[in-house]
Length: 307
Ligand SMILES: [Zn+2]
Ligand SMILES: [Zn+2]
Image (cartoon, rainbow, N blue to C red; front, top):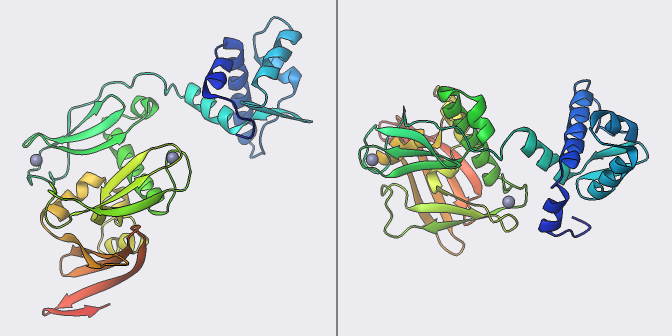
C-alpha cells in the first residue's frame, strides 16, 4: 500500500452495510462489463446511487470518500476497485468467511506412504482437507480448502478440485511464487533426520513466504513431479500426473521407485529419479530445489542408455 493504513483502520472502514453494498455494486458492474470483454469497470456516482440503498446523495458521498484510497480508486471516469477492494469483495461474495460444510470421511485411492496400506480416507478438519490412513492412523496429506470449494462441488468433484489445486500450488512454489499472496518465494532443501518417510526420499523442500508467512513443504521427489520434463515423461507412458493428487504418488515412494539423493556439496546438488517400469527420468536440483537439468534414462538388458 502506498498510503499506510493500519489493518484495524482497514477493517473498521468496512463495518457498515452501505459500504459493503458499494463494493458489491462495483463487483457486479465489473462482472457485467467483463461479459462483453471490456476493461476495468468504472462506476459513475449516479450508477452507484442506483445500486445501493442509501438515504441521500450526501450520505453516499461520505461513504465513497471513506472507501476511496483503500477499497476504491477514483478517476475522471468514476470509481473502481483497488486490489484490497477486489480481494475483500470476492471473499464476501463467495461466502468464504462462513464455516465449510462437513465432508467425509470418504475412502480415496492411493497408498499410505508410511505403512503401504491402501486405506486412505479424506475428511475436512476446520479449513483443511485432510487424508489420514485408517490402518496406521498417520496423517498422509493436508491442504487448505475454501468454504466455496466445499459448497459448490459434490464429494468426487471436491476431491478432484483438491488434486487440481495441489498441482497448481506445487507449480507456483516451484517457480518461486507464493500461491497465497503472489510474493517471491524461495525454497531450501533440508535433510530430515529421524525421517518417518521411506528411505527412498529423506529430503524435504521447505518454502516460507516472508510476506504473508505461509509455509509449504514437500518431499523432494514430489516437488518435481509437475516439472514439464516429468509431465512429458509420464504423459509418454499414458499417465497424466497433472490430474493426480499428491497422495496418489505415495506408492512410488513407498515402493522405492521414486528416490532422491544428495550428489554434491558446496554447492549442494541433488538428484531425483522417477522410475516407470524400465525407464526413468532424472532431475538434477540445486540447494534451492531449482531443477537445473534433466535426462531420460532407458534401461535395456541392464545397460543404461540415454534417450
Ligand atoms: Zn498407514
Ligand atoms: Zn505469501
